[in-house]
Structure formats: C-alpha cells, structure tokens
Image (tube, rainbow, N blue to C red; front, side):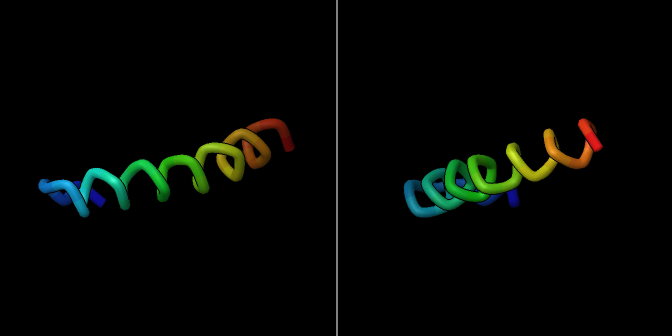
Length: 29
C-alpha cells in the first residue's frame, strides 16, 4: 500500500509493522 497523505502514511506504517514479523517468520521457516 503506497498511499500518500497523513492517513496513508499512518496506514502504511501499521501494515508494515504487521507484515514485517510475518515475513520474518516465513523466511525463518
């Protein structure tokens, strides 16, 4: 999600924070 704007950047941060651990787990497994 690459949405510009205050709402977009905030959502991107939340999505990134949620997806980062999942990606790390998938790479570790």
